[in-house]
Image 1 (tube, rainbow, N blue to C red):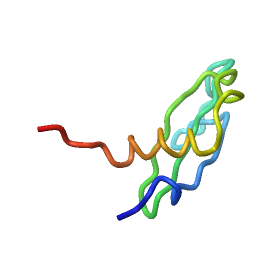
Image 2 (cartoon, one colour):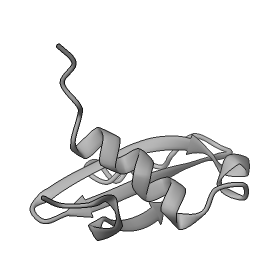
Image 3 (cartoon, helix red, strand yellow):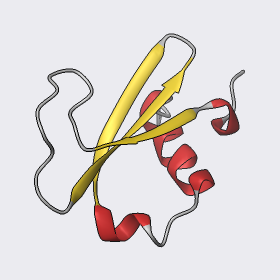
Image 4 (cartoon, rainbow, N blue to C red):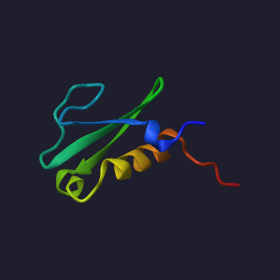
Amino acid sequence: MSKYKDIVVTLSKKHPETGDAVQAGHTYVIGVLGHKKKWYEIDSQSLNELSNEDLQKELFKILHPQTHH
């Protein structure tokens, strides 16, 4: 089972697929885990308050959504 610490985090000002610039004041947080790649957009100011580990945990939730019964 993969863990959030296995995720490689990259920050980008361009959309990971289209290459379009992100809106002003925002950054794409891109996570790669094996063959999977997911991302989300975040307010750039918020990045200053987050550690790499915080970003990995958030991306892990996107890469491995928990099923609730």
